[in-house]
Image (spheres, each protein chain N blue to C red):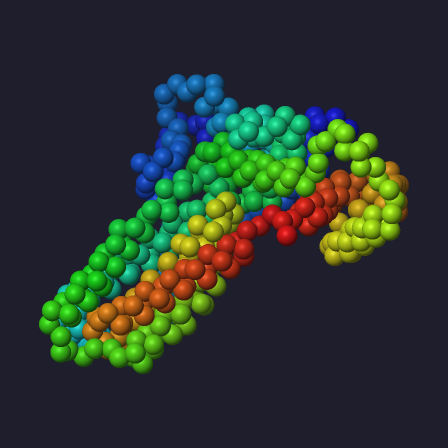
Amino acid sequence: MRFGLTATGTIGLDGGFPVWGERRFSVSSEPVTAKEQAEQRRMAWMAAAQAGDRRAYERLLADSVALIRAVARRQGVAVDLLDDVVQETLLTVHRVRHTYDPMRSYDAWLAAIAGRRAIDALRSHGRRDRREMFDSEALESYPDSGDASTETERIEQARYLREAIAELPPGQREAVEQLGLKERSLAEAAEHTGRNTGALKVNLHRALKALRNRLYREP
Amino acid sequence: MSDLSRHDSLINTLGAELVPVRRLPPPWRRTLGWLLVVSAIAAVLLVRYGVAGMQQRWAATPDLAWAGIGALITMMSAAWAAFALGVPGRSSVWAWLPLPGALLWLGASGMGCLRKWIAPGTHAADMHGAGDCLWFIIGFSVPLSALLIWLLRRAFPLRPVLTAVLIGLASAAASASLLEICHSFDATATDLLMHAVAVTLVIAANAVMGGRLLQRQ
């Protein structure tokens, strides 16, 4: 494990606008707080992860969960949505990990991504709320009559969903078909497709996100 | 699956997918790369049109020189700000960086126009000539914007529309700077209006299209 950032000395910096409210880290022999030490550890883990160190990466992501939850809570995300934001943020961190500069604050970098994902979750949830009806008497007052228009609407929705699934990338479509439509277990799906369970899970997660985006997209 | 084990499971999967990545170079270095391309175009134009014409214009009318310098500063600062905003965690204050250059560019152009009204009689652009300026700025801005968008797609701009506006400003300012090399018109209201229309069109097109192109799920 590399802990270069805890060494004595000053790290070189790019550019030169310290007054612009951005945190840069210069490590000196002065004592640092536990919080700063924890962040410096995360910075070192991320630098190691960028070089392919899996162990450092997994520790970093596990350490990041609490930070992401705190950011999402500050943004006003409801408790039941916090874990969705955590998952989305972890996936984004994975995809854009090359944009992290080890000379800069990891926490600020992560908080910016988590904040973005929290806003996405709030928007997406808001859109769904506007479309859904929360009326406890609605079901009794207006029971589903099973008439032709309801049936047509159901057929139309099913067709729309089928089209959306058909347009997914092959890996994601396969995951939805195996795990969602055919209701196979992960092990069965893995055996059937020849893919490992981890890849299936990630593909399913991405597919559900893509479908959600498409189905709940603003007209 | 509980949320905790759900996270553990995802972390485990992402760990298994981990491969080494090439770090994004710092914004100033990426800005330099783009400026090199603009410099290469400027070199070609200088070879074609020479420096003498530009020097004569600038010596006789310093306001045109200041407008050109303003456009140059705007180009560099807007491109740098766009690359800085492409990295998560960078302050949105970066978006103000091009303001001084833009004010100089706008102010000096306006002053040139005012001087023209006070002392008319020099070579002024008619609608046809000003129309050429419009197409020059738009024509050069399209490839320069496309290059910036392509470079920024490797980054992760969390404010894609703001970043796209800065891309538009950088490429429009670059095109206006390049135009200075072969611009044979004095500042007039018509010419200034055409420049303003061209710059606005480039920025607006970038805000609408560039924002979408930079937005990644």
